[in-house]
Length: 425
Image (cartoon, rainbow, N blue to C red; front, side):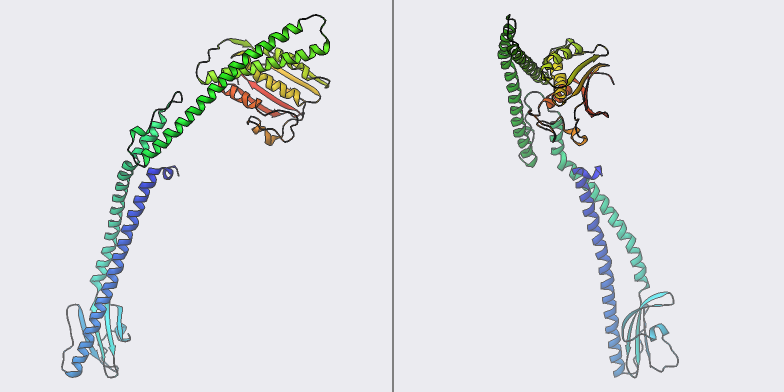
């Protein structure tokens, strides 16, 4: 099936089928016309000769019966006792007939009148043998024309497809970085050249769109860091004041947590943009357990009055070479989602064996929705509360960028399990 899907293969196949069908129709037409014309010509000639002979015989009864090498003439009567004419021919009605006599094939012209019967028989055995020899010859001609059609199709398709093949090869060599090279300058002003021009126009628009997106993300991420730093600094100064009211302290802590999360997200997005542009230089190894501890501390106020316990189990040390903000955003999304959708019970964060596993006792996610959790703006049917559905989409992009894997599954005892694997099997 793959052979037939290729455009060049289709052209070759079209030439082959066209040539074969055309030559086969020519061969069949030749056989038909040969048989038809032979029957008409011989039959008409025999009938005319027989009619002329009978007319002459009526004028002159002494006229001799015609007899040639391949034509035999007989005159007899209905009650002729000698039966000089073969019974197979004698029994035929008036007209022209094909008959087999003594292993031979004959065409017999018969005229029966009340007082005489006239027969003119023509031996067509040689014609039949020639016809049998003509059939394999025509089959051979069809095969020869099929081969020629295939060769012509292969040659023509190669020339026809060469510009398309060149265009495909140049598309494969285009770099993903920087502005793509022009394609149309390498092709003539024909269908392929217009296609190359359309691809150039599309590539330019796509390049401009990607560049605007990268610049916007980088600019926004960079510009947001300054006000977030100011907010964080001011909040720390306020929290350091003695005699601070507890309600005010709680609100300031909430502001500090939001500022820290926003700073981590903007930094992670900035690293994401720089990594896509190949200029990410952060190569320090960070302790995942420490980052998880800080994230849990920030998310603890979300528990509120819910009967929910947060528990962190560090089985062994896990270090990862990636920006700290990227790790914080990734595990923070998993922990935050678990806390947000678990009304009671426990959220267990396990660190070890090159991974972070977050398990909760919430409602879980229907199996048919698990494959959609990473889609942008996707929210499950049973999900309540606020949210734009972008958190896990960002987590997925970060995991793909740094070569991590993430997997969601429902626990047998109820709840959801999210596993973020940095390395290992």
